Length: 318
Image (cartoon, rainbow, N blue to C red; front, side, top):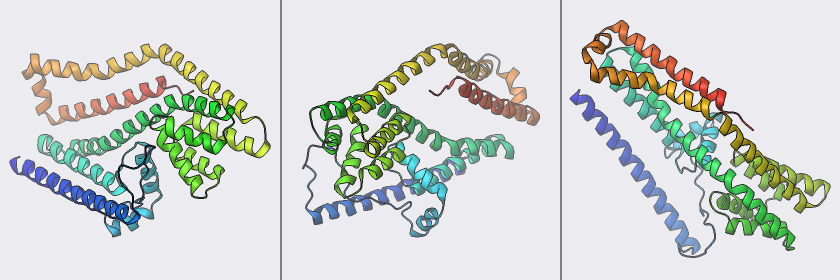
């Protein structure tokens, strides 16, 4: 057991050293590029965009070439961007592999059973994925909450006689994150010569938001067919706020179901911990028996599946 712990610590320290060296090398390259183009860190009060866009999926050329040929790597790259993380795809896959290996070795050393080790390895591999999904959900939720206010700011700018491109710049300057950075990218793409349609399409592809797709569709259709853009954006903002109101009502109506799901998910684990504390000999017999451990593993798997089913039932999309 001691050798296992020492091996895991050594492996983790090696990974941390490699990641630190990669980050330091990237920072040195960015600093050198800024010195060549004469960019200072203190200039500008608007949203800061990176001068150099590192499109590598891994610091290792061979792994980078392999990942570029896989479509799933592109989806992982988009997921990491939507989560607001600066990780490369190779770093994410490394974390998944480390989590899987750690869970596998720990379960194998405790249970001495291959099935339990495989289940624990799968659970360890899912932890980085769950973390990225949680970060993405938080960032998309923050964008959805600030987006109606950004639309109101855009409408006010258009009513004042400002052009649409200048109004986008105002939104990029005045809105909070993450709306600020996303609209700043749209403005920068237009400045570099990209058409508005393509810049807005890229924005809709980067952000997983149905409200944003409504906005992009409305703007593109208005530019193709004509009409009052201010009125279209006002109606879009009103539609988004109505969706938020309906979503709040749904959260209220499904509160009992969500609370029931949380209680049913936590009750078996809490009861098991209570029995181990009150009567350890009563629970220890099942833990020592191979059949008992298999039954506990199957019960844990079914508990996870039941929690996912309950979450699917109460998660109503508007």
